[in-house]
Image (cartoon, rainbow, N blue to C red; front, side):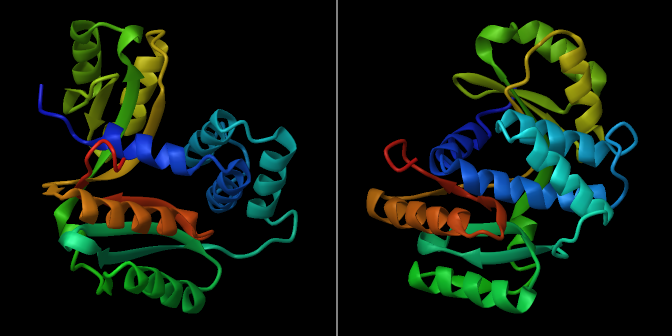
Length: 243
């Protein structure tokens, strides 16, 4: 197996920051609206099906999910969201890749720039950061749910690239095209999936001293707290106390 992908540490930090349930639901609702544009039946719309699963995992109310679907299909009036990606550098030269859903790019971009500047970083031009990341499917399973050998055999047979020992969990890494197939194969085997998503994983990480790590942590918090931001990816190897 490969070494620690650092994704579990990043996700634990993000989970602590995302304790504000209403904000989580608002962000997931935007994803549902966009996914539902391709059809409101999750049986025929894979993206919508997995976004609904994400919503249920966040304990999002059923009627809130249904309203978001109706907005996406045009049956209810709603705002027109579009995907946007922002790139930047934070304290210590840490690279950031931010995925957002916005209804006004002219508003969101300056707000992203201001967040970076306050943190002592800068918003970068498109393509200047993204090359430092590789998109992978990441399926997370609690260690006690399955033994390593069984998970390795099952995952690789389904098209996964690797299974990573990340301490409390296993991380199954997949090519993006095989993500759903691997996830479904694991679930079909009766193994509980803790989390599953497409993520931009850093090709290399940056080690930070405690002071710089604290600054990076504050920048991550500020970005994740922004209503338009869906995901924040970075290449910082944060000390446990900062995460």
